[in-house]
Image (cartoon, rainbow, N blue to C red):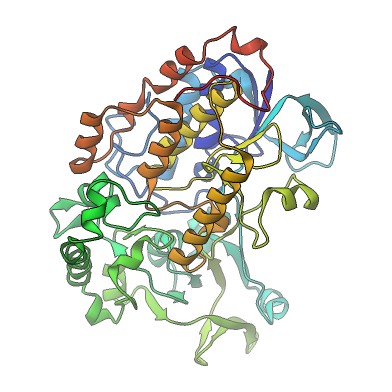
Length: 512
């Protein structure tokens, strides 16, 4: 079976490795000149670092290098993925600097026609047929930059508006008046190095988010709180099991005090009250759509005046104030602004699919209807990789790749289509309510990383043993614990030889 993978971030690269080991012929298309996805040199902004420590943010069979710092830089993560490609001999499968212009099901839906071209070019176009397609373009691939009133006059006066992922050269901010829009990770990350060279650095935040200290009280690493099964269990999942029933039942008071205590520590540690930066709502809101680790140095620069935060504000207009670029906020404040850097989110869509195919993939609200965050219901020969953004995104993507390989090898007995559809709709309804609609069209599963991994592996009958999972309740999850899962899946599904099989419409071999 010939498989096309679109995207060479963690999801695409791990899918290529797992599928090649499973006997498939894999081609990975990547628009950038390097692997990495959001970590590619074409998308890295100054100040980019991981939110996870290096011990929890890697693929199962290759740890981060020992010499890396605890929170690796964007460049180091990209280098790690390069070493992953080298270790598993994936270079021959990569088509870098190659953009997929379109992907279409053939008329009888027995394969895909993938049209590609050199990145940035209009031609030549190359059309190839594949038996299966994996979408690994990433849910953070298409930045959303607002269109502001007066932007034409602002640009004519010399102003610039760009996304954080388009800002690569810190020298472009030297001596300038810079506005950073947003209060998420990328906005706060980029504001710190900008504040070291800019004349003024202002952060315009529509809504303040809770920030998690890397070390609570300067001592306890946050990984012992949120990167464990216990930390995940502090937030209510769709279906409660085991000890979670106690935490969200008789033990709810204790659970609430535990969560609130973290918020109290963060408030004191960052001196948020004195800065006027205590977010609205409770610390439990940290898990609604994203967990934002505090950028090192951010609050210190707010304290010393190098960064000014305008909370509960938006830009209503860009203008040329006396011939100089500026921005007006909702409260009427006018700020000089040579450069506006927007960390204002992303659009979740697949640009190489047409509208008709999107309509088959999404519900009426535009949410992706994906069983296990992987399998579209009613669209054959298609799976997704990395549409389960979580605390452990590399591991989550890799285990999804194992599920896909088992599916293609006939190793999964799926529920009836109606039941899968009902399950996906119930999950999306819950996600929408829990996050106030900030669930990235159903692709962001924070903070329920391990729940997702458990569901994927339980369906394969390949989950880790109870002792290992018990350890994960108290200690940060080690992706290395899952390094034997791919080989176990290959052994379990080894019937007849995977390379000679075609994708089943009803997988024939059950694993449960």
